[in-house]
Amino acid sequence: MKQYNDIMGLAKTEMFTDEQNEISLFAKVFGHPARVAILQYLFKLDSCICGDLVNEIGLAQPTISQHLKELKQLGLIKGNVEGTSVCYCIDESNWLHMKKVMIQFLDQDISNKECC
Amino acid sequence: MKQYNDIMGLAKTEMFTDEQNEISLFAKVFGHPARVAILQYLFKLDSCICGDLVNEIGLAQPTISQHLKELKQLGLIKGNVEGTSVCYCIDESNWLHMKKVMIQFLDQDISNKECC
DNA sequence: TTGTTTCATTGCAATATTACGATTAAATAA
DNA sequence: TTATTTAATCGTAATATTGCAATGAAACAA
Image (tube, rainbow over all chains, first blue to last red; front, top):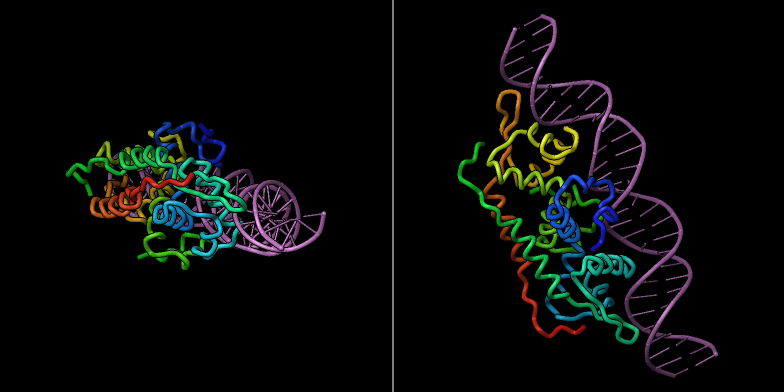
């Protein structure tokens, strides 16, 4: 597993639980609309090459490539070289793990004794 | 509604859908373990004052205050002044809206025609 | 009034993120 | 071989985020 501190910058990850750090890492990768758009596109197509994304999304090729790298580093997508192009798709088992962790966080119970 | 460009920096939000921008804004606020920890603590207690959080989490008071401000700006928490302290809690209806948007994103179907 | 307590704000340094032009690398085509 | 195509990487500028000391503001207590 990647060390949280490698990519969290100033965040003092050692004062938080592994769960809190994991949630924030997943959230962080969704924290840019281009990466959200890339994932939605991959879900729509079930496969895809990088060039498609450059046309689909309006960003330059190096920028898309960088966003793909971040998604790949977290394990949410995987890519296969196919000739001169690369075929990316969702990594199903890692996506399901992430989904479980995130939904558990989002699904916390709101008791009705709100104070304000 | 807050203008996305006010807080997304370089991100070219105009090239993305409102949905993609909304998802990324919600995700961004979860993209720091301190804010995840604050939210979990608020869920656990159903109410809370800022000073509690400074003790609970190891960060300085201005840092906690800043994280609270971001959560409040997105509407996920609300705060009431009570004497010299401030009572924060989850904003239930906004939390439920966020949850719906995020779960819809996380719940996309993975077809079985993976290509790689 | 003068403290005291509690939280917000300011200001700033350190670091991270985003974007993209230029270049490189790798596969294929001519 | 020499293009050509496609995507990754490098380098760097612009901007954002994080953290906290110092300070301010507001409510309360003595």
